[in-house]
Length: 289
Length: 289
Image (cartoon, rainbow over all chains, first blue to last red; front, side, top):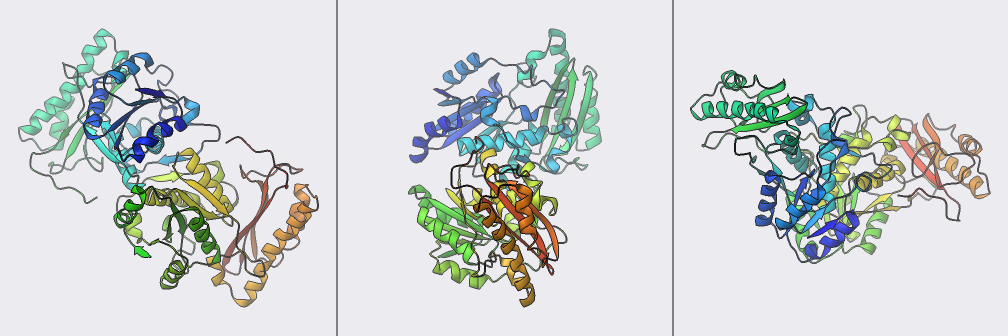
């Protein structure tokens, strides 16, 4: 595995593979890797010839009162995990390599960036879309791998790829969870022992609603109410919404299209998000793309 | 030459060339081609193996009170000109191929889009940056060719390429002029005979100032005053500014870095723009990129 810090170095390292027609997979991360990230690496290794993992804690997606400076980092451990996972290139640029002086062009997502986290994290998805677009172009990857835990991010990235005609395939993989159901997240390390226990309320709420959905419940308000019952242990619930999986607009009741129950809230000072997708085993009506 | 309407068709047509490692050049246009466009085609043919010309009158770069609906078009003539010029692929998508339903992701330029035309054409450069980014991605060109007449556009496109790490080289070619000096523009066809004569005031103003610059004049206000004397025949002057070529901020007096004298104004109902670059034959101090 090679660890590379510069865009020029990255392109140089990939030139041979590209010439040889090899398929390049990208797993963009902010580091502090966990099994969720590693499941993306595995998927990339299955589907591509060369896997690039990027580690970059992207300042433009953090708000002024967010946790940019304290975001957990452990580069040596990440490097070891990537090496053991069969990553070919670990791309870990410094901030000024990604955002040099005079940087001023952003990718601006639209309606998909407004609900859910978009209502609480102003500019977050502009920063996400911009850095993801940049990483795609730096790597010129054929495919990129994201986790469903960041549901809104996945929707925005897919829309960006379609809207800007980016020549890349987006692969979304299921959320990887701890043994007790908590969605894996680098931010879980912020949680104290008691907070860690309370955090389980989030996945319990989602699973309870998903169970009712599987048992036939299709009423949006009832499904939300089922989840809500479990969320007392959460300190500040930001949202609990059942949204259309494609448009992220409030799902219409009764559910007939794929929908996602999405939640965000604080446990102590730590903001957590999670979601479950509710879709019938029978194919659902979809918008034409 | 092949005329292609769809992105899928375009990518299919270019797949072989790309595999063979051929260099692809793109000349993005809004059609109604003139010798300025054809000089870009020539440059592309010299520097690339395959030349793609796109013709697309991009609605997102027109304001609500601008000339989208009347913008001159003559597709059969354009097609003939491209064929004779040795173009390999003429890409002419319909609006809904470029902006399908649910399109919502834009490329948003920054400070460079604010002065000059940016002050008069709200959203124009957002539309330009977005469609140019899309065209680059559709074609996956190795190089793209633009005319210096659209000076601010060139600056914004170059900045976008740097900022978003687009893997493409931008080549800017000198403005091509009519025998009497009027900058070639598809919009010149709007001009009546008497307006056509008055329009010459623009290039005369620029040339007069450029002559003084060549004779050693470096005072910004004096250079602007020289140009201004010639602009009486213009009906509504929007701006006459001497700006730093890189930042587009007002040039500092006395001139020591490359600067551009830029003008925009109406002749009758027709808006015209033009510019000259003022730089010493000795290399000028430049910002690090």
